[in-house]
Image (cartoon, rainbow, N blue to C red; front, side, top):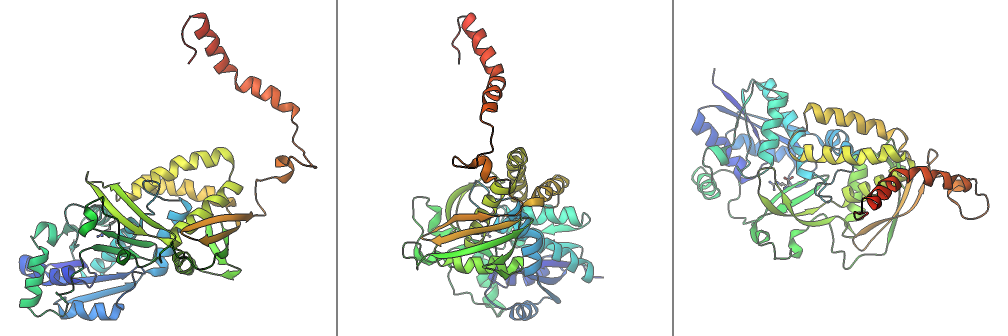
Length: 403
Ligand code: ARG
């Protein structure tokens, strides 16, 4: 039987050419796998048909938008996941769900190898291949751009010679990856890190310099998950989409950073993630109100580790699974409402309420109704500072600087 290869297919020039390119180079049959993670653009049926027209023997398409929102974006929200304290892991979250469908398609169609269109310089190749190795250790991987010398010029040439139904003229200087959690733009003139991004780079956000009137939103969370906006019940997918629209109108979630890739390269990235940034801001504040102090402190370490692991392609690793268990446990009381004002590039929390808050007005107040026993503070401070005091006294006796 002829070998079969499942290809992660986007519908664009490179992966369309890759179908024939891989078949020519390996003699295998190619099955195109397209996964809708909310990237927008062409509909999946058009993409399916193009794959077949480009020579795929089968085309597998999946609407994974709800699955992506529920099983990938929501864990990232619970983890307040921001790589370099800024980037909400947009691409890093979508690769594992694409991998899951690649494996499913491979089993359905009897493929032994998977292929992706990544170069040899980025994180995504690692995420695909480590992901495959974790879910289907018996599968092999190839990357036509990296391993079979498929360059952009060769792709254009190949598409024209074979009259593939794909535009080769549209010159987009950027490499763009987008899904419902956000959008990543790189390469082109952005590689000169002194160059400011131009207006045409943005798509999910409007210019925050000219915002419409402030927009107030109340986000209701249950166990760390947004369940209603302004009293209207929403699914996780709807919550992200709606917040993308509303926060995007105010230019929230524009990010311009030089980040450390796993392969050692520093790279300049422009991101837009209006919904993700607003939701994370709201979620963090609800945690401030409802989470016990020591648990919250430890969670900050755990979520940092979670974020790095996911960025580095370890979505399906034992450590990540254990950290998920911890993070999920911390969300037991992260239930309540956050009020935010969206305006001029910022999502600002202006109110919080929760039936399970640990905030206690009577403990906090400086007015009437104070139930905090201030006389107990004296003894507490004496014991709390005792070790430091002892050490300083010793330094003095030894004639050394106290600190
Ligand atoms: N640097 C980001 C990451 O590794 C974004 C990658 C976007 N991929 C792309 N093909 N443009 O998560």
